[in-house]
Amino acid sequence: MSPNKIQVRFAPSPTGYLHIGGARTALYNYLYARKHNGKMILRIEDTDRNRFVEDSTEKLIHDLKWLGITWDEGPEVGGKNEPYVQSERLQYYQKYATNLLNNDKAYYCFCNKERLDKVRSEHNGYDGHCRTIDKTVAYNRVQNGEKHTIRFKSPRTGITNVTDLIRHEISIQNEQLDDFILIKTDGFPVYHLAAMVDDHLMNITHVIRGEEWLSSLPKHALIIRALEWNEPTWCHLSVLKQSGGKGKISKRQNSKTQESDKHSIFIGDLRKKGFHPEAIINWMALMGWSLDDKHEDFKLSELEQVFSLKRVNPSPATVNFEKLDHFQGKYVRSMSISDLNCHITPFLIKAGYHDDDSQLNQLIPLIRDRITTFKDSVEWIGFCFKNKIEIQPIDLISKKSTQKETLLILNNVQQTLTNLTTFDHISIENSLRLLAKTLDIKVGQLLNPVRIAISGQKVSPPLFETIEILGKNKIIDRIQYAIDRLNNMNR
RNA sequence: GCCCCCAUCGUCUAGGGGACUAGGACGUAGGCCUUUCAAGCCUAAGACCGGAGUUCGAAUCUCCGUGGGGGCACCA
View 1 (cartoon, chains in turn blue, red):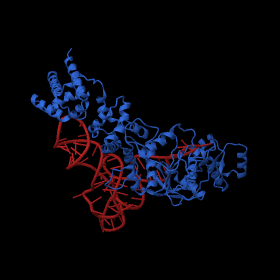
View 2 (cartoon, chains in turn red, yellow):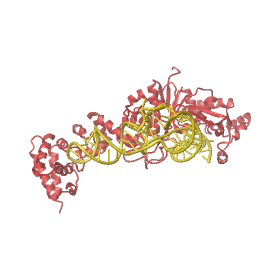
View 3 (cartoon, helix red, strand yellow):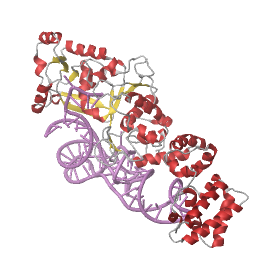
């Protein structure tokens, strides 16, 4: 591998499911790698055994793939940097922790939790208590099996400067840093060590991650410098803020403002709610990045050509689900009938509607402009697949109309349709328009009760076409049922 | 409390000292179209957080406020 080759990684921890914050970070990594013919690695950071969530890695991989985000190396595909799960890489962390120990850049710490809690309330971080323990004494205590951690020896004075690609120079007074833990009592590394070791070993050239890491960036730089490694290019993406309230989106809090029947911050939920991955990608890409002031519609394949980290915006973005709807609607309208059929069918089946494929294909052009999510199709055309339409007779009667007039309309419509020899929407339209004229009422007035009778709904796809698709028998039956209901209304 | 980051319409953003009466998109309002609902098309309202500088000239550069966000673990 050429050393100049761009190599990035997405390194989630298996503590929950993929949401738009993580997905967007994965997306930017992916796009950057693709744009520069680099490679992307998926690495699982599972060094916290307490927060481990059983199926989250599989779900995460599934969600990423569903979005269209792929990687060159990772747990299920393998690669030359195996393994890709941190709990299987313990030897490396141990090795470099020892290295730091030997070079006097780290030390053993024997402080227990109680002391630490006490120190924290008095100090700003760890007080360096074990820093002065004689090296051989400390070594012997470790040999005797005493519980210990390994801490990094942070500089006490001076300033640490780090450069971030989208935030420029960041500096911190070293006195703000404490001697943080590298290796925990259980022998597992802490993120700061593990991530830096892996990034180095895996030749990561650009670390693209969330802003929540910005405050620990100096620690990371210090570790890398202590080990005398090359520093990657840092790129900290701003956080995504909740749509309604305050603060960043989070796996823990849901319901409230960021969840609704239609939306969710979780990729898996969005899938179940009937969104298309391309719509989600387009939406996420624009939360913090833009090409210019003219282009907003991007397919994943197009983003791969035009993405640039230099155009990533450092300020936090608020999640706006209405814009997701916009991209989704736009995407739907660009889809072919057969493609839409594939996406809609599972939702119809799940809703319990028998799916007649050829009929569905006829129906799709009628709803393409009306649905946003694929799941919306259930509400729009579910009635077509029902055996019986439940209606309240009162709903059949328009505001300004009467029971008598409605019955007259329905009877006439039924008769007209029965007499039709060619049952196509043009003939249906012509005959019903003529009927309205004959009855001296507006077309809308005529169609309202018919719409309810046929669909059971106040809104429906265009009626003439719907009547044609459902067929004469079904239509006549439904109108008859409505007439019966109206007649029995007063009894 | 301490540290760090950020700051243009309600939201996402364009903007790199003069091309800014600040552009686009979503949303909102009105209109056209119309069998309902959409879609589509047209129109409108809507922002440079505040104050000092620097400069002939600041949305753009600097500083100070203010506001928002993130982080201060043997979590990532």
